[in-house]
Length: 592
Image (cartoon, rainbow, N blue to C red):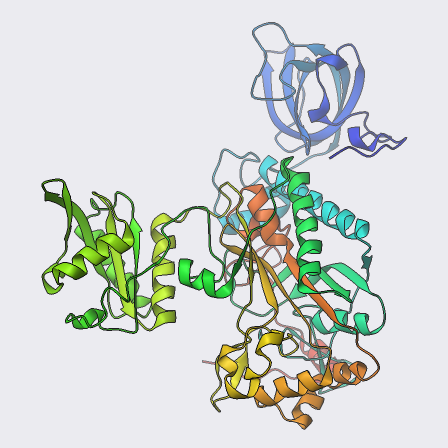
């Protein structure tokens, strides 16, 4: 990205205390007298007449040559003034961008002393995560973490610029909101002024942005902070940021175009290369081919249907509604212990078992299957497996037989276990997944459960199935996937009262419950809701992938641990009795 043009020379870091940033100095600056500020990365003394200080700021490291001795230690904050000169031939450091120059004839001013840090502030030392997070203010000085935060900032800037260019207006929505169940647990904020009542922190600005469409904002966006009280993992924190988008008088095609433009702008800003147009795949195709609704398409090993091969089979283990396989190239050498582990993994995922077949030399130029279960298969079935899978000599074939969704899910997980690669590893493979089911499963009363939220517009071709076959209804919902991570999701929203009533009826939500849960939105819809649709892009996940990280914790300034604990502040903490009383609360006895 081009540095901003500014008379205060922001790009070079110039202020009244410094002329330049440490990492920006080069041979072209030789002969220039400059003043730089930063932290002492390393100090080396050569007797009583010369000292070398490596000075670090966020831009990099600069070697400073100080006459005599200098009383500074690691992480002291200092200012250094001197003249830039080329290093002597043979002393250059090719590992540093500033390695051809040094700051000489230096005078040093100590701005602040520092205790020895709890760990080395460089990227060569692995440090326990809890120690890193307890001293996050030191950890963030490391070059890797500085780069990660700036990658994130570049993404945010590019997303904002793209949305502005596309005619969207940035609007901030409330952080204190009414409880509106959206499928995840909410963080609750008890009210001091209204005892017994609470706000919640937003899982997303979903309903607020739909109200903005009713209000005529037309095209809204926001870099939104969202909070969900859900279990943490590599791609999930309690707090997260998303590019939140909503637009009026648009179709699904319009939203996909808006979002793709913004995400590809961000990719280009970070990597310097603009990705190609994002391919599409229906949800049904993703499940069938990859066993996942967020498939990693960077490698093959797609699921292969063998159901017809085993139609009428005498092998009871394959007498199932669905039989599918994956082929592991050159996997025939897999050890028996590894195969047993894969079988145990399949059972843990819900399958009854796993059948495996090594593809071996069958003699006379033919290939054959080797497996403990091959004796139960007819010659036609064995030939069918080889023909359908296209397996070659030395390959391994893994087969699961069960209900369709379970079979796909188990093989999809095994596919990732065997052939998967880190999410941050290139190439970047984007994918739109469209036509998600409208409903997913049923509640205890037998009512279908909304797969996205109850304001998602059904596929217009499937409207007549709402009452007769809700499980077959497709929604106008869509996800953006990158390297097997869901970057975000969105949908066309329901704006017609008649369709909304039919969806509520299908979900078993009567008028009173609908009014109680969503009355303020439904009431607004009575005053003229335009057709509208939206999306949300997970910025933490996008930043992690571009930064080469496999956990979003590494691109968040102050994250929580896997257990939701903040080692730096020791949050969460118990509130004092007085604070509880102000909120109309009292502590309960501790649970055993």
